[in-house]
Image 1 (cartoon, each protein chain N blue to C red):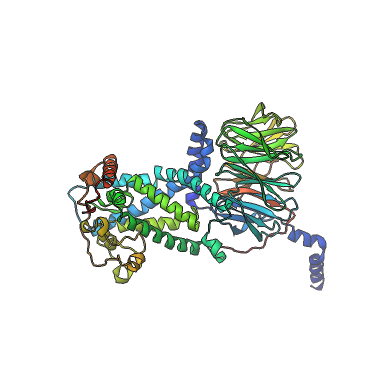
Image 2: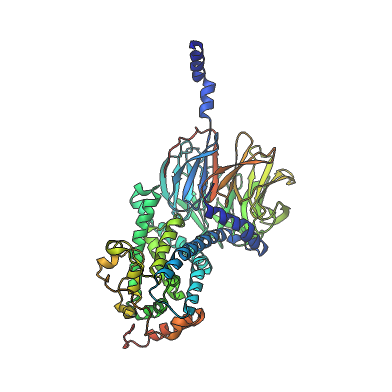
Length: 322
Length: 315
């Protein structure tokens, strides 16, 4: 018995054991209709609590220094700054209609799409002062930057257009038709890819001229695009088809199609190779194993939308906030 | 297991609405369609619950029995349009973005639209308590709107359509002129800007409130007792508001769910007992016409209201 106690006490003091006990990781899933952010223990894949927002959050982004997770609350007209390790609310900053938001690669700018107000706002990331407001023809939805942070590309969902804004001169560069209902935008290999939710393809666009170079079929209602951490695989969520497609990022040739019903939307990549996908109309997050094609589900709020994984974060404490 | 309404709306969205939107090139409406599906399902549940409770009540202890109930049929249409059909969609499309735009403009000017949660941060996360507070404030604002709709000749001309029904039943709650509905939506939108009404976060509680509003119109001899009638509006209390002698600016009992505002402003009348309903001063079409005839008659009365300042309205 004494030996057993000694063995157990030794186990509890070993660094590896301690690390395993705490290294669950923390995930954040926005519930747009439920005005909350679900906090999920990545190890157990269970929702452990909800952080109330004000009105209608949609998307979230990690700050360049990794210290804050910014949650845009559109009708609440504010950005909520969370601690990405704990979910603690650190700050609330008034910002008009923050729908989709992203920091430029150089960390200098924060671009905020005001979807309902038809405006693209560029903020100084350090001070959160509005630098420039670009009025647009319709509903700016998704955005992506050129790697040198000189251009931001914004899809205008209720039109057929993609807009480009020069961040060096703070002037519009071009606005061109690219498809029926442009949604997700991604810079890849010197081109801009735009998912077209009104069709079954993504458009490959020349970033200089805005000219559509080719269409690549993905599935009905191509909605959002993601690049795997090793930059080898392009993932596309097809909203109407209820599928997720993996493609060779170099050739844009499809590799495999996975059935993810319930409106696949946002995506993030876990270190164990699994892919987390919000299912917008199913109250669930899918955790897809790309090797087997099967997925597990995590129950969350009414309208799971933006998603962020912090695998290095500690497992979240179970605290009921409502 | 998730919320059955959400899951049902998700099923509708995935299997019916999205394929249709995709087919017709309308995928930019996908968010709206999901919200409409939720509105419509909760609306259908409201109708079903109201029907299941009120119909037996009306058969059990009716205030009036009619040889035929043809006039009630139009009220059923009003209910379906209002709670399940086109009105929720129009409301969402017209007012959601307008509200975002105006509140965003206010934020730009440095004036963040206030919210109860902003004023009292302890409310954040206390969803039921927050809802109850919002419900009380909104009920008061609706009392004011309703009271004013009886005071202005042009507004009464529109609102009189609601009062024209002589065969008042639980279906009559949504019987309104579309312009009167429009004013109510704008009124609600302004209040939402002032206090930041949350969106569809509390659908079941909203369902309960709408049920109480429908019940208050029911053709049933039902009172909640001396105390109960002073806590919640009963069919007996609200029927006095619809009485033939209460049409126009001489009415009483303007509240929707809570009688407190009538008691506070001395417009409460607990003495009138199951009076006949209707508005004798209006065109017959307002009472017994088809939906279109009623709407047109309301418009005519609205137009006349601007030209006959010497005629006392509601008489």
